[in-house]
Image 1 (tube, one colour):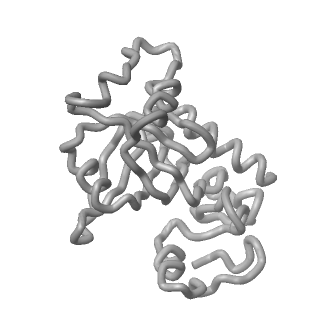
Image 2 (tube, helix red, strand yellow):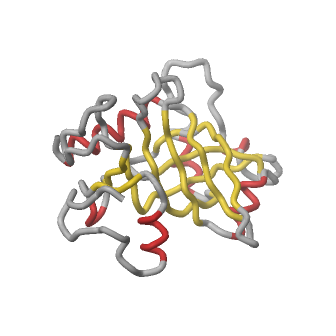
Length: 199
């Protein structure tokens, strides 16, 4: 499996699912998650509409940092497919609204009402938002109880599909993220891709 294969796997998950789980944080650091109907606007951009007074919208007005997960909750146990991301989100304005309306809502054959600029500007209670991912990971594909083809690991683990860490395995837990935020190497992290990834 190549990095192109991983990117294509991520894209297939994003294209096949209609909702993402959006994680936001308020000014006091209290987390919140919300399911939002979304449309991809590129490899790292995700658009949705929300009420201006929704909790996650209020959070974004204070703190743009977000996390998100796109996953299929209908698959059999131990066949999980997921895309994880972190980045920043914002309310769209100006020409960005018009650009987003070309992709949102999705034109996928469903009976979905198209939006106009008037639906998401001025006195309308809704706005268009866009998250731009700085980092993307996938749950590395593998069969139950079998090692993945890329790293030889038989446990659930993420693999980066963006940036310098592309192809490097990591645990599904948050230890990598915490260590990165603190500016230090996670415990057990080797320099080479895929080495010593069990943590």
